[in-house]
Length: 89
Image (cartoon, rainbow, N blue to C red):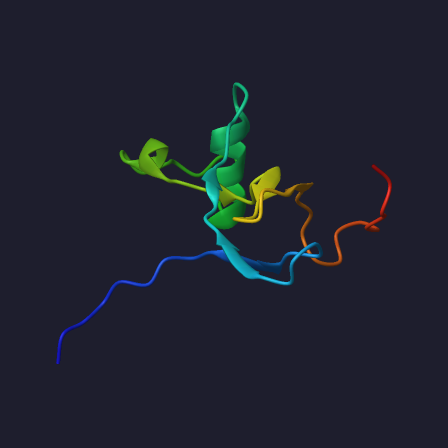
């Protein structure tokens, strides 16, 4: 049997046309010092613990800020339950 590599994606339904859509995550962008802080957080390391040599190779993905549907509609993206969604334009 052939194996396939699965990638994470965000699934959303277009409120304009009802089409099911998939949007890939985007790499998180860090300010100075934030990448080390994120690495320590996700790996449960204290400030005094040494980091491995390849710690800067860690990739953290984030949701896209904007998504678009094949019908042409574009929407601001929010994580389900992260904030209230309104119909304000």
